[in-house]
Length: 263
Ligand code: DGL
Image (cartoon, rainbow, N blue to C red; front, side, top):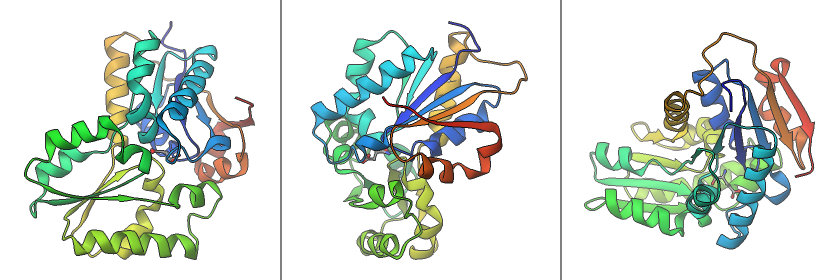
């Protein structure tokens, strides 16, 4: 493996591009390959075996494309399949999990909220982390039912979205939370709307930056970090809604390659 092999990233759809952005900002000379498995989105309602099988399929595709590290830019896939992926492949694999720890440590009200998929909230990995860091904290867990599908269908700014978010966030506010953890990589795209709904003072956190930092650390430890200033190849593949992927990455369209890929 060489420093100029790409970083491979996958998600159930377009949401993981929120993690890709952090990775590209932190490591601008790195080639990247992003797989948007929109054909199978959302993962959040699938059983663990299905999520594992999809994660294996995506990982194998990225390995076959020459990736030097895999970033599972999906909380649902991480919490349900990362142990299997790490046990199966030699390649370094980075995952994303809801940022419960910083929220619990910094909360002043002792009450935090987590918005995530059903698949993440029911996973044993999430339960373990939650138990570890929220001993004296009240946690309000809400499944963001319908949010991923709206984003995947290009409706992130719709009235339907506002209605769903208002209902979910009302429960958080009633619970008197001071930290809201976004436990799904699609949700950072909803931050402008979430801010309009939440009262001032509630802090929103996600794990994107931490994942990018961890990816950089692991690449550096393995002498696989690309330090040479160069124009990177940025490939984005979708197996279904390429239009939505292009739209969400519109600010990067001049330096990126978008294609349909059957994976
Ligand atoms: N973006 C994903 C996550 O972080 C998955 C959402 C889904 O497909 O349900 O959980």
